[in-house]
Image (tube, rainbow, N blue to C red; front, side, top):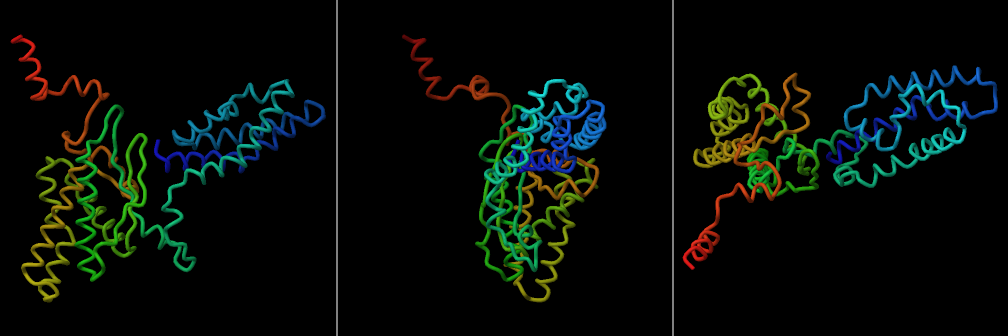
Length: 318
């Protein structure tokens, strides 16, 4: 799991604990009253938390199970007779509601602190961040070429847009990286240019979905030719903002960047909100950019090097 996924899971669990006031229900069960008076509180606490837990994603379920909160969806827990057990669980809930948000702050990525916090433009900070995700299935690992390819591709797209907007080119930085089930990179740049990069990627995604039946090479050729950014570049060339030679260089550079991005199989979180198709399935990387299995299995599968061949031949001859 990546940090962002863990943070979202923690947020879901803490919100469920607080909104359902489940600790108050358990506290009521601990008060010295007739048992029949406890049942309505226990039933309401069980019902509210059960509804909240049904909305958990897989990571939130893991967080809840890790801290033992999966017991709250078990009806047997709410009929427990042991006050000692309830006391322990009550204090665990109280501690979790206080400490889980602090834990989240400890592992929160740096971009949340470095991005703009301008209250007049609250979206500005998020607009300055571009998150790249490199999906990896179980037992898969990205080769270094895949990481360098996606970063170089995005850099090329960013620099072309910066040139078109008469903005500094060297303003994109790697703010953070993370790994887990997938790998991700958080890039910080000028908000206007980052927004433009996202628009290009989302335009690519729309076209990939539309032409999903085509082979990868055909698909890339078709979608690249119809991108709005290329039309804009042609208009700027006609307006003599760029000479023919510079415009052609920019055109080739952005097409190369797009090719590198698509070939790497990278995605951005905003893709998932664009429709019913799963980005990680349609944006599959070139097979050569992934390895499968452990280091030992890769070593066994690899062809012998020249030095190993020489050593083997030497031993056989002797």
